[in-house]
Each structure stands twice: as C-alpha cells, then as structure tokens.
Amino acid sequence: MSDPEAPAVSVLAEPPDPDDTEPLPEFVILTGMSGAGRSTVANVLEDMGWFVVDNLPPQLLRQLAELAMTSASDLRQMRLVAVVDVRTRGFFDHLAGATQALAEEGWHPTVVFLDATDEALVRRFESVRRPHPLQGDGRLLDGITAERARLADLQAEADILIDTSGLNVHQLARKVGPLFAGSTGPSLRLAVMSFGFKYGVPLDADFVFDMRFLPNPFWIPELRSQTGLDADVAEFVMAQSGAAEFIDRVSDLLEPVTAGYRREGRRYATLAVGCTGGKHRSVAICEELVRRLADESVEIFAVHRDLGRE
Image (cartoon, rainbow, N blue to C red; front, side):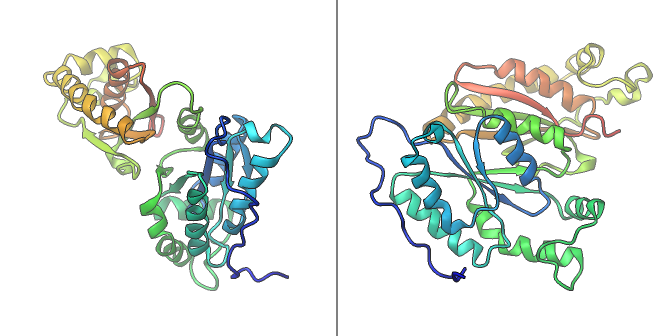
C-alpha cells in the first residue's frame, strides 16, 4: 500500500502547450466543511454536465488534469470538478502543493469552499444520526471545531465561499446553478440574496444591506401572510420613503464595483439584503435590485434564503 503522506509525483509527460488553440477545460476544486453540502453541489454540477470526481485525494489532481488533456473521448470538452475531503491525511499541505503545481503548468482551478454555522452542521449530523469524520471519541461539536481549525487557511484563500446555513437542498441547487452555468456569456455573476437577520447574516456575502429602516408589512394585516414576491407587498415597500432612493444609490455604487470585478477577473459575487424575517422587505427590494441591475455584462439572479421559513 502506498504511503498517503508521500509527496505527489508528477505524471504529466509534458505541460499543456500555451500555443495550443484549444482552451483548457474549466477546473473546479470543491471542498469545505463536512455537512455543508458538498454532495448536493456535486450532484447539481454533474446534472449540468460537469465531469465530477468525488472524494479525490489532492495528490491525484494533476493526474485528473492529464486525463482531461489526453483523453480521446469528450472529457477534454467537459468541465471538471474534483471533490476533495478533509479526511485525507495531510489534506491541506497536499492540496496547496497540488494547486500550485497545476498553476505552474497553466491550469487555474477555482477553489469553492462550502461553509455553514456550527449550529447548522450539528443539526444536519444529528438528523442523519452520523458522527463527524473528525469526532473520534469526542463530541460532535469537537469534530466540527477541529475541522474548522484545520480548514481556516483554505477557507481564507478560496475563490468562492458559499454559506449553506439557511439553505435546503433545493435552495442550494438554485443558487449553485447560475454560478456555474458556464464561461460563455457574462463574465460576472451577481447573486442578490434576501435573508432574515433573525436567522443570521450570510457568511458568503460581499455586501450586506439592512432593510429594517423601512416599515414592516408584517404589521399590515392584509399583507402579513403575503411575501415580497406578491405585488401588494412590493408596491407597499417601494412606496415607502427611502426605498426608491436606496435602489438608486446601490445601483450607482455597484457600477464601478462590478466593472472592477470584471477587470480583476472575479467571476462571482453576492449582495445580501436583509430584514427581520427575510419574508417581506428584503424580498421585495431584492427583486427590484435584480430588475434595476440587469446588464448584458453581468448575470444577476435572486436567491431568497429564508423565504418560507415562517
């Protein structure tokens, strides 16, 4: 049996030819906290046509790249996803070395890190009655704490951070789909996410705006049972003093920001809009922002994280 701590050995006979007119396949490294939804995201990407390899030791990332480049099948035309697991011994050291080696040979894999709050992770592990992979003889929370410490550097260096705390599998799938729809079309994808502060601020938000300065439709009896997706609620929210001005100011703010993101090669960003419960004000403002910010160079889509939780 081979030593799992042995350094990765290059098997690429030759690096990709920089003059080759055929582009390299897209390459995503999917990782993150256990219980944060790696399997769900992997399944979504596989359904979208990505070639997914699950639980791949980091030492084999270069072999996967070679397979994509030398395969006589359609693999070369596919987008690649490698799901890597913290249970691999020497995980971070091997992953850092493997990604560096890939970069030196012309590959630029996108590292996607899935995260969730400790509370959400505990709830998920308890619901399936399974121990955490790093729990050992300790408590479930001990395993989560150990994993979070082990992955802190990787999380800080990840290209994309996705917070799955308040998302069920269907909501997570709806968020992942537009993010990884492909490299053609707009170079930047902007998720505008509504959320409720009572459920926590999204960990993956690049911008956070608070809509609690607007009157709450919850206190209007005929609007209480409706949501920000309903015309009556949307009209009520947008008629309030400051709502239209907020939309104008945010639109002006994001114009230079999105232009800068595109110049720097950043492909994904999340703008979070919150209210108390994530049902009325944040949803209506989120939908209005998506309409206002629609642009040919930026793909904008709405994600309503906490809608339906009340």
